[in-house]
Image (cartoon, rainbow, N blue to C red):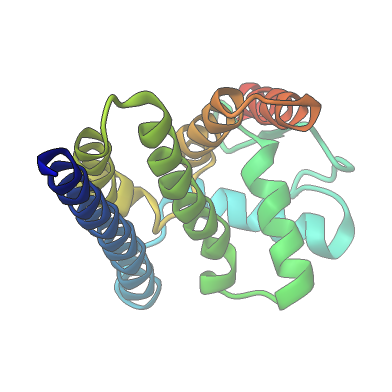
Amino acid sequence: MKKRQKYGQSLRQNANIVTLTAIAILAGILLRIAFFMFYSKNGNIYCDEAMTILNARAIANNGTDIMGNAYPIYFATWLYGGQSGFATYIMAAFIKIFGFGLEITRLPILIFSVLGLCAFAGCAKLIMQNERQAFFATALAALSPHFIYQSAWTLDCAFFPQLFIIGLYFLLMYTGQIFQMGSSVLHHLILKV
């Protein structure tokens, strides 16, 4: 009889922890959306973000970057250096579908940030020894100022951690061919970011 009570109590505790984890994920998503909305209206545009936006708009409208190169793999920037194509092409697709606007150009990183948080929660559940550890790891990721801040600006390097954690989730979930292909595609995209 006592074993049943302990088992029932542990089920209630696990249900509470799962509920708390869901609340932490929801809080993280809402914080990312609030930060995104605030900085889309009141924030600055970084020079790298402006260059990505210019190239994405040119790709969406003309099929060339601002230098006139047709669908380049690597985008040259002013003075020296360059940017990877992932953020530019994602942003160009959003511009082509939804039109041009600052919120539209920043929407891809918000979406990938939310997907990255959900994938992190999935990884924590798979890796951690119990639900309580998974909750604390997920809550830290959900409320991390770095990831919240990162979700508001479309910088090409900001996609790396999100793609990495999504690819890691697919790798940990490897139970069949589709997960192996999803993991390899995402890890190849990471190399391009």
